[in-house]
Length: 367
Ligand SMILES: *Cc1c(COP(=O)(O)O)cnc(C)c1O
Image (cartoon, rainbow, N blue to C red; front, top):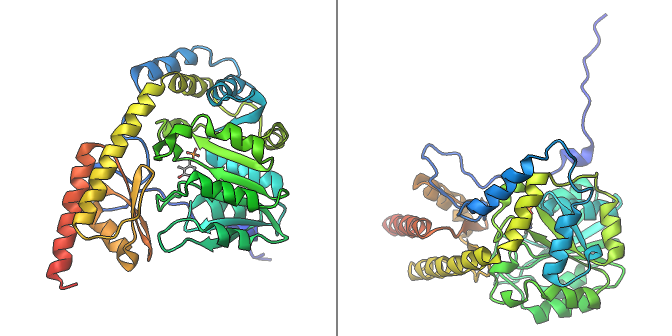
């Protein structure tokens, strides 16, 4: 007797998740310029690599239970007590912990949209619904619209500032106005992955202290993946009230960060001059890119990050393909725009050259 073979199917909420793309375009040409994932263009310094190698010697021993040596160093950097910090293998992981800790299936997470593409995946995994609030005409977050979208099922509001992939930033005063208006029983996650690159970067270290004192429902997300140059090692953290930190840690398996990763992160924190240098160079390349793009008459949003956003609408895929043919990996958001990371001077030259030929093609096609 033949029985029909069945296979176990995953949950409906898993089947419905959007995919998370990598910043690559599969093309024949070798992609010499990796400008699709907003990584830092330079390798870790020899000092960081040495710190990692040294830590490998103790690989037979478990690392910190909760990454507490790193949490303590981060607390000192921000002028907070250590019980205000939780670390994990990337700030995406911290966000996943947060959503799982505060949301039940059917709850709502409010976020501006277009924003970080991991948000709908993380909300969907927890069975929560992402309520997408359109950006304003300058591709910026719209605080009033975000407040209006908060309802009785809203458990978490995500604020990505500066925003990925548009690069735009709301000034401090506007974020504070927004925080004041959000009800105290709604958790606010302020994702500041790119804050080091912002013009207001003076407050990168000290800004959170005041805000955490003022808003008990606030969690600030930071990462070592962007200006701090360690995307490949996976380190992120959050700053919040001690109560929120213990809730977040309750969702975390023990030993989140391996010894060499902890050592590298500590070495990065001890060498902040390298970060300052990286940020300064980024600003220089970003301005050069933006000036070039404007000269070509292409649309571009204001950027406070290590990438630029070209809102080219329906041309997004074609432009990304054109860049890929020139050896440049960028990120297409179909029908909306293209995000290009700012890298080295060579990268900037290559992008501007490719955009020039793109313009020439458009001109000859009579567009
Ligand atoms: C890159 C990025 C992150 C960083 O995630 P990690 O897991 O720390 O690498 C977080 N939020 C946004 C908006 C990002 O663009």
